[in-house]
Length: 482
Image 1: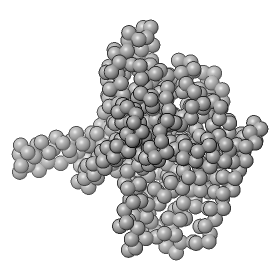
Image 2: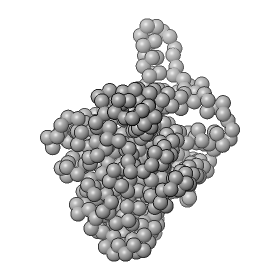
Image 3: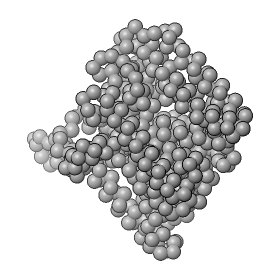
Image 4: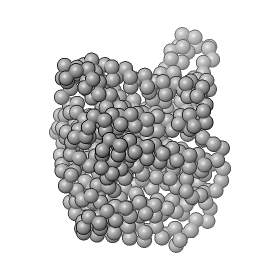
């Protein structure tokens, strides 16, 4: 076990977090938010001091094996969340540190679940940090490190880190060198974010609102600076967010293929077609179901498209209280919570790629039952899927269901309705944000007990990191030497 290399990665992450907190500190000073600036400044100093450990204990071996990759990713996310919660706590914005941690983990994991009952009362500097955690966590904090600095030596060192943090059943490199792949991913990410900011500014949205909204959309997080989410903005601005939420839910390799003009590969991508097909069908069904609640087909289509795009990409923004929609529409939205966005995107959920892979694997099992001697393989996009990937997908689903059930049992101790408890866990585990009933788009998570908030915090981290890294933290065998 290369403990010093794991410590080095944690120190790097804290250093990056300290730098990312500087704009929040500047906004607080400019706005005269003294207590918020004081809390942010102390956090920056603390993160800087803690990051010096890498100089005191330099690693002798910089190679990162699979075990170190998974453990370091989980520990880095825990560390960045523990420190990232301090500005809210020291700044006096949120009195309870558990609530601060819940809010911060919700930000970094791009969940968007909140314990705040009065969002607009938060200091502007902290509102900026709250939204920026979405953007930083959307693509992955360690993927950012891959893009800007060498992290380890050895042929597979970087791959083990990226595999543990990147969403989806498998990780594919865009170019032969993994560090260059990370740079390409972040270039696309930044480009799409700036493009959305431009469209929002063109619609008359103030610069601060445009930046924070774009951070929430790009990271598919859903933190808004308004109490009513995006309801008070114009239909044009809501429409821009509808389109960009859907775009950020697409595998980023698709955008790279489009830049290379390899349109035939894009057109034959099965996950993309499943994602777009499910989204279009859901919009059609919900539009038909809620037509009587709105003035005309256009408004119903607008509301349905926004909420489907928001829920399927696990963003969590809202323009309507879908808690009041008919049962069919709410059921469709809950199903979309499970499916989620594409692998390799900033979205959460099980991922469209896994759903497709499970369907193909199930069909193969039925075929083998009918013809026991047949040799059947699973193919996606014209390529054979390795058995290890299929096995990992089945293992992921088993752990996913186990965490879902156990978490719901713990949360049920608070004696809320089954609809509240179940959808709260689903919303956190799938990194969506709003659920139904008390945790609907007009509600929040403040009423849960500290124990439930800690359970839901774990669910958010497990959902963002694809479960395995967080599970390994609790396995003694993962910490043994050798």
